[in-house]
Length: 325
Image 1 (tube, helix red, strand yellow):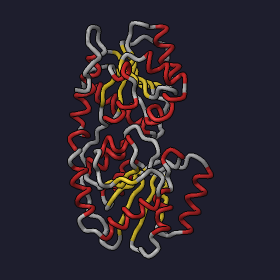
Image 2 (cartoon, rainbow, N blue to C red):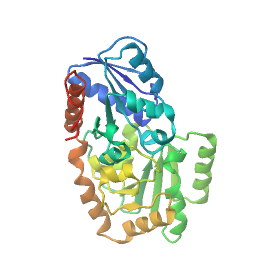
Image 3 (cartoon, rainbow, N blue to C red):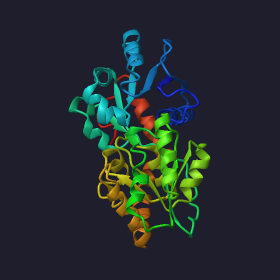
Image 4 (cartoon, rainbow, N blue to C red):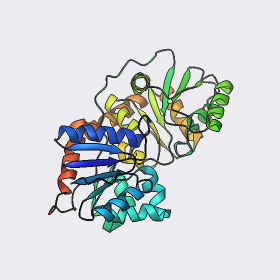
């Protein structure tokens, strides 16, 4: 098929939507499809569109359906779609109605959809090529935070948690991610000066960020909103324990009873998990075991199979129901 993937994330950026578009394009080309990635649909006819982000790609989806009403659209729902925009934004809700297929990135995303939309939805987990776990440092507890400095990520929760661990010098929180505003960068620099245990390194090349992750004792994901963060999939693939805010996007990837979750925004609770990671020798191995149990979900072969099934469902005569089964 001739496919176009529309994502609001521009070339050269490291946003999750761009990474998903690039990875899916590779999978789909390997399956024999012809794929182009665009920020906005260029108006040329293709067999199907895959759009990422209900609100920000709405203009492309609407234009496609006006010009090519019989050609299908698959819409990938982001965290801001699922947990904010489809509740309040008219364009995002209209995109749900226009799309022929909906995709969420973890199982709990289905719970945010009303029945008519859930019937045409499927789950496709984001995959990660296997990376080798590296020995963590012995002199201190190394914790990474990987995510851009923006409000949805609650980026300084781990830094705030350090205030509740004043007698723990052998702890280092390394934050990797670009600042989305000068205010955020200024706050990161201020927090580094206030506590030497917090280091913000900015946005690093992915390979370098993955080396930090692979040698960490644990990773913190403190987001307020996530559709299914790729960095969690990366930690799962490597086998790095995750300390996660208890939001549906994280629980959907790590499991309902995952013991490394804390209430979103509560840095004191995160501090308690960090203290336990340092003091309880059984805690991090337990988290690592739980994380590794999810590995089958994030294998590239699983994502490619799910994409093959989803693309096949776009062809005439294929039922939308039970795609995730």
